[in-house]
Length: 210
Ligand SMILES: Cc1cc2nc3c(=O)[nH]c(=O)nc-3n(C[C@H](O)[C@H](O)[C@H](O)COP(=O)(O)O)c2cc1C
Image (cartoon, rainbow, N blue to C red; front, top):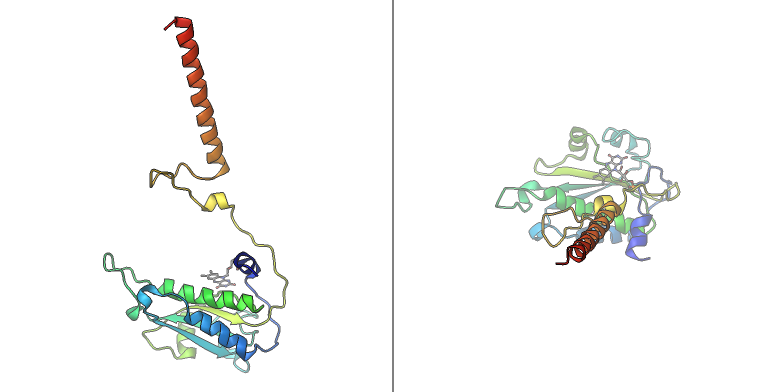
C-alpha cells in the first residue's frame, strides 16, 4: 500500500467491533509514535494507553459518546509544554505541534494494520485530569479509540486542491498566480489580451506608415 492509499484509507471511525487488538500490533503502533519528530528532539510527550474493558462508565465522562469507549483501547497523547521547544524570537511553544505529529503517527500506523482510530479533541479536560491522574505539567492534547472498525470506509469530503494550495509566483508573497482554474483562466485571458494589444499596435503602425 503506498502512502496515498494509506491516507485515503484513514478515516474517523465512530463504530468499533469488540475484537481485541493484538499485542504485536499495539507495540508496532507505539514504536511508530516514538519515531515521530519533535521540535529540537525534545520528546516531551506522553502516550497513555488505556484498556477500556470494565472502565467504560468512568471513561465516558471524558467524552460522552457511545463509541468513545467501545474499542478495546483508548490512547491519550499529552505534551509537557514546559519541556517542549519554544521559539526564542516570539516565545511560541511547539508542544501542540509535537503532540499532533505523535498522534498522526499513531493513527496512520493503526490504519496500516487495518485498525480504526478517531481523533478526539472535544473532551472534558478536568474529567481527563481527574480520571487519568495527570501530572500538572502534562497537557492532554487528543484521544483516540483503537480497535477494529465496524463501518465501511466513507468517501472523503475535501475542498478542491486549488482552493487549498496557493502557488506563490516568482515574486514571493504575491499569491495572485495561484494554480486555481480561475487564476489559470485569468492568466490565459491576460496573455491573449497582451496578444491583442500587440496586434492593434502593429495595425496602427501599418496604417500610420510608421
Ligand atoms: C485535531 C482534531 C480534533 C478532532 N476532534 C474530534 C472530536 O472531538 N470528535 C469527533 O467526533 N471527531 C473529531 N475529529 C475528527 C474530525 O471530525 C475528522 O477528522 C474530519 O471530519 C474529517 O473526517 P475523516 O477523519 O473521516 O477524514 C477531530 C479531528 C482532528 C484532526
